[in-house]
Image (tube, rainbow, N blue to C red):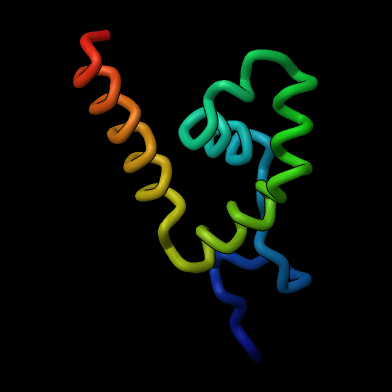
Length: 81
């Protein structure tokens, strides 16, 4: 019996939840969380679900989120916010 990679569902796809997509946008492009319309535009225009799936497969999803948050915090601190 062939075992599936734990990040794949039964159909071989990488499951991506709306919460994960929202985490990505909040971390990488927080300005696009200002409205549902802006959020949806960003998600579709930049193919965020595909980026999340690729990051999960590469094992970099959590690190990408944390690095983006740390970068934003550093910039805010640098500019005195």
